[in-house]
Length: 317
Image (tube, rainbow, N blue to C red; front, side, top):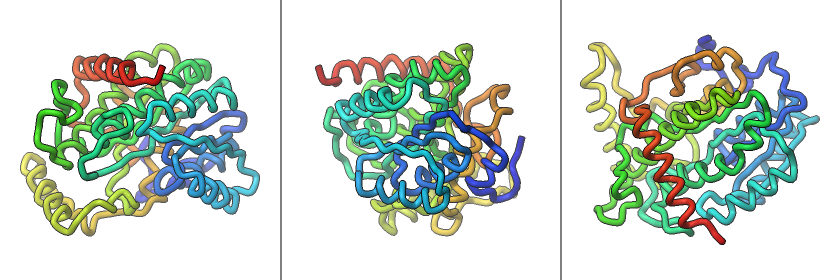
């Protein structure tokens, strides 16, 4: 079940035929989402590109068609910082297709200065988790209708930077820490996959959280030189509990490109062997281990209930 060394997203779909199936990718306008779109379009699937920048979506569609001339593509406007936009995007997808075979929750933000979404959520938790939580919830009937579907949630080993404070998920009573907030949002992504998989496995839907590695994309645009130094210090500290001989990650050097970084999420979307695995966290095209607090089933259920309450209270009438 492991893949060749340093595979690309296109390597993961070699010989895969998804003709007649539908894939939805958030954040499809750049980076990992764009590479995933190209790879999955090459399988013959109908790929629905979802993102908030219409011009960038059009550029992605043109780029995919350069590489896959017979690609079947649709584009949907999706702004994860607005639950109104999330609902509108889900409704548009329902008009395009009654069935979704793969939902790839790929979009995200990282280490952003403090701000809030349209609905008042802390920007990283609101974008990376709550927007996707509500989007996924609205697409659940289409996923179940597929009679064999995958939900792929882009998480990160960055979840080790911080846990969720269930009493203050939106940083209303604490001094803001953009690294801890990112860690909490990524922890939420893993917990979301854990609870999704528990709820839907018996109905033919598997959910996986994916660490893509350190990928050179525009996500790092908010980072300063001091931020990179802090991350290296954090990575070295994390390694103190690892087996001797483990090499600490250097985030200024140990990065990969989007075509390689997207391999694991595409693998998660198409590999049939994953139907039988017991676990949801993937890295380097294999089952991996997340921090215990990110895979605890009781905490996953707590987050689900909290997310439902927050989204229901904020959802437009």
